[in-house]
Image (tube, rainbow, N blue to C red):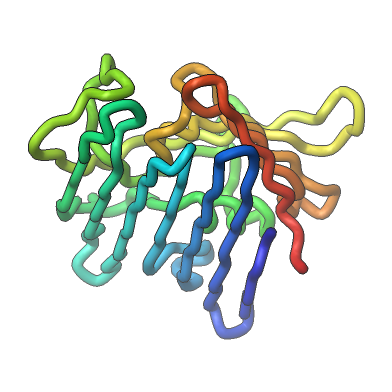
Length: 211
């Protein structure tokens, strides 16, 4: 379910997305402002639960100091080992940084122009982890990192609606590597459906519509 308050004249937004499935629940919240002609997050919170195992993240964006304060706490599936990260990441001048909500708003409002290859590119902050991290691997200490994020939009062969694939591992430890999430947009470029493949054969679909 999608709940949103977007004040384009005042340059502010407050959006939350919540969904649940078989043993799965999630909630994503973001609050931000219009800055230099595009939406930018000020704070974001996300919560994912898979079979009772929880993962939470909190981010605070300071655009005066150009830093992102990042906090993460999650538990592995089988051993329930904790993964904890508390870090501050600098943002270089000229680099756009989004979260999942601000990226969707920027696409919907047409203020996120595509690159030469057709992909829409920005950056996000996430927990830094080894490429070969297993389902129950955990370190004593984690840092955060700023990484590129690309949204590739194509028309669905059946409906003709715009659809896009994106790497959900930027946002969730439960996401499966190599199996991107899919978001389907309406003809008004507003998101309608989010489909996600998660670890251990689980999946989730969230209808992004206002109540």
